[in-house]
Length: 205
Ligand SMILES: [Zn+2]
Image 1 (cartoon, rainbow, N blue to C red):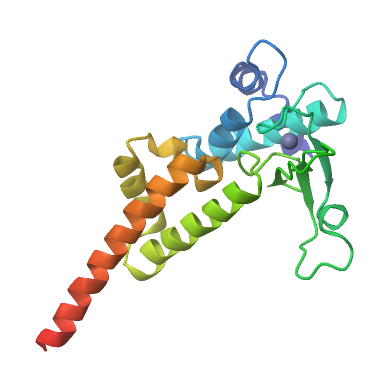
Image 2 (cartoon, protein in one colour; image 1 turned 120 degrees about the horizontal axis):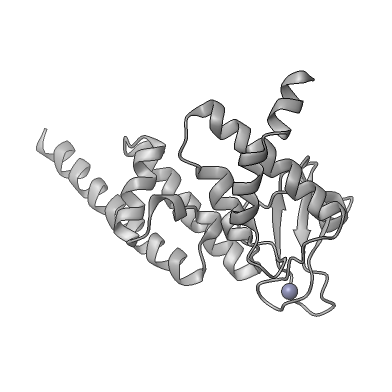
């Protein structure tokens, strides 16, 4: 209990974070939050501290309706609901938890998963097409680091360099459609090249 109080009463960390989260209009900059929470380049205990402060602030802000969180596709104010409410009680394979969804009565269908206890979004909300592109991108990325001998952090560095973006911004959950297509092209090309090399090695034996 004492440890929690110490973490949450870290005034300097809170002030720094608020500067990062606010863009003066009281809107939540989701990209800044996700990038900051996932990639703060500090030692592990400090990183944990920052995440806990961020969690508390964002949760409070969401609960109090302090921040507007507009749908990036249509501008409607997004809502947090349970996964079950979103997918329906009979959908297969639905994990317990929450997600931000666009409640627009049209066919916007933009949403993003979030941390269950804090409501921190896991990325930039995406519509159906973008979700499919990100899934494809994740699939190719997993092949790269799981089967091509990359460590996961090195694989992100490798991809960031080829996409010409800082590694702190190299999260597939933050990619737009164009970025996904470019990443898929890079990953597919490289994996094909690796396969060709191993085929030649096998044939050479
Ligand atoms: Zn929308």
